Length: 381
Image 1 (cartoon, rainbow, N blue to C red):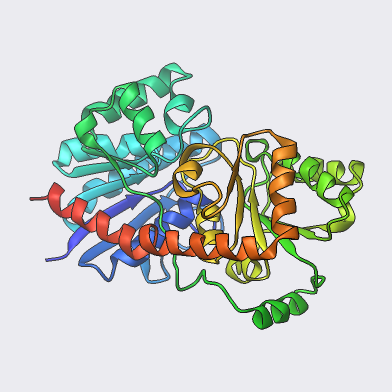
Image 2 (image 1 turned 90 degrees about the vertical axis):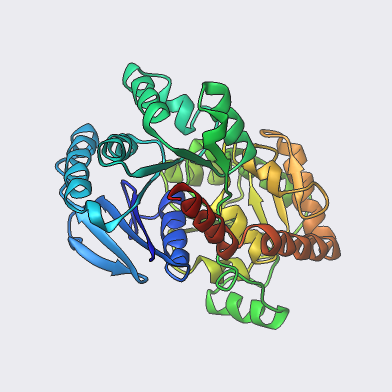
């Protein structure tokens, strides 16, 4: 008999973020592995109550208003759904320790179902420290500690922070995020040039950032480093893929630094894999991460990496073996890494090959899904 798993995520594609991407990726991979996953999520305007997204059943539940009202109404509707459909699943898997995880924990206790909560990030913007700032947040963490069965962490840093806060060590496991290595893969030089022409990019070395445009991502440091690169007379083109609240201020900064002509803001794109295939390197100046999907995708695409020495990034990147690690906020260090990639392409090729190997051996979505299957099987014995 297949294991039924109800995944709870406040948002789900077409809303796109790291959690949403990883939830879909995992659910899709589990379908072929003796698991029946389905997702419950908030129903946003214009979306169907039920549909299949890439073969994954998705139930979009009643949600009223915005902010706290939306969270409370989704908690209520998801609780009713879990009660009504109790025969469809043995495990409730909440993605992120947000308010829906409380619903998962309480429903799991009442229905005697196993409950998994996935933590996303550590540090000031992570699940635990964010929750610990308020009375309600601390109460939520206590409920999860008491009623949650397993807490999945994408990195050792997130795992360590969870245990240090008080979550039982026996309940905390590390399972990294995974990437689709069939979708994110390298191309040869001829294909790379064809893609550059198709996207109307210049035939210059291209460095890429992919992710949210928020202050925590450290993009101001990247732009100041890029100014140093341009002033050193190194030719290159910087692609910024994604949207966020800082986009306007970043465009203004690029103009102020007189580097706007060598930067392209693409906005959100559906075919990130093809954009990555145009690249000659990937830059990731973030100041806080669990384990970034964007970083894993770039590594799977065989791009050499220049990234900050933080969180899960430090676990997947080994300095000078499969990428360059620099201290957060160090503009000149970041610029030096980029200049090395631009001036020594053979170094970049070597780092890129090692990056791809790292993903194939440790972070493919198939391997990550199999670890979840083993966890599910152990939980329902």
